[in-house]
Length: 132
Image (cartoon, rainbow, N blue to C red; front, side):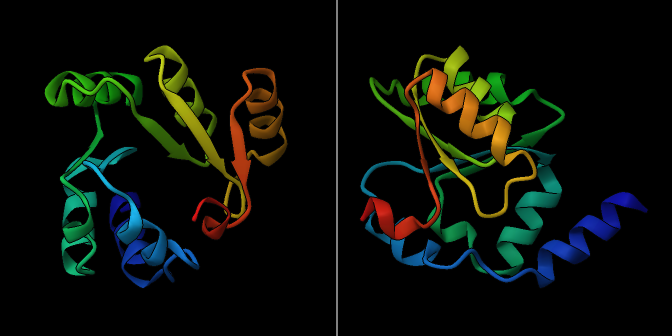
């Protein structure tokens, strides 16, 4: 029942303002590494036509830090940036020795994310346009 509620909310949620402009200007490969259930994410992104912006979408049950490690291994990337609004996003970046940018508007843990990002010299933003 919880999964069905999540999927319903994901299908109805408004897109983050400025995200499409931001993602279309990014060069290189783009992946999702999420704590949400993988097939559910893939179904929702496909239904909303958002999957076309990403090379692949990964989710649970695999831990986020392991997802990032797998992405780095598959791509043989020498550099990468993790964008996220959760402490687990920051930790996955830190564990995998990649950069992190915190996106604050929809974070449930803003203060903690800002504090941890500051300690590790990671950037935090309020709008995608700050990076364009």
